Amino acid sequence: QVELVESGGGLVQAGGSLRLSCVASGTFFTIKDWFWYRQAPGNEREFVASINTRGAYTNYADSVKGRFTISRDIAKHTVYLEMNSLDPAANDVYYCNPVKVATAEGVNDYWGQGTQVSVSS
Image 1 (cartoon, rainbow, N blue to C red):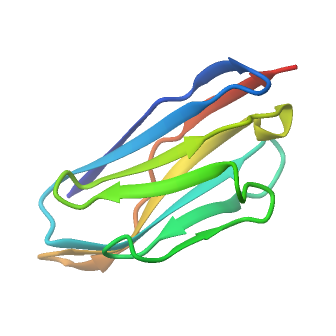
Image 2: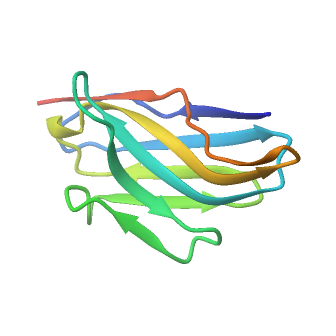
Image 3: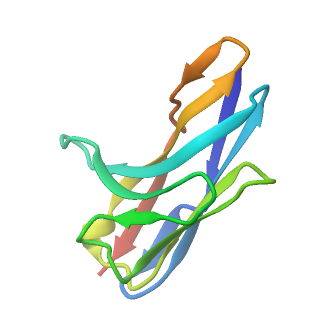
């Protein structure tokens, strides 16, 4: 069983910053890649950023390039999303998504519970 706990969301003024964290715990061997997605009410979940196994490769949605940074701490089974220069367009629930998590039962993807980010103008 893999459990994910997200934190770091909240209310911030436009131009401000937040740092999201997602910690994986439980019984698993490895996590291949991590993704962050976000979703506004009534909209589809959209890709924000991803990072590969050892953190050597990252990818970002065009809308966040240059402002958001994804990183991971392999030893702590944690992924971070540093968000700078936030604007109201970032008002969403953010979800972490560890991909290809290897457990004794097999390989699966998981989703965090989501953390709300609210940006006031």
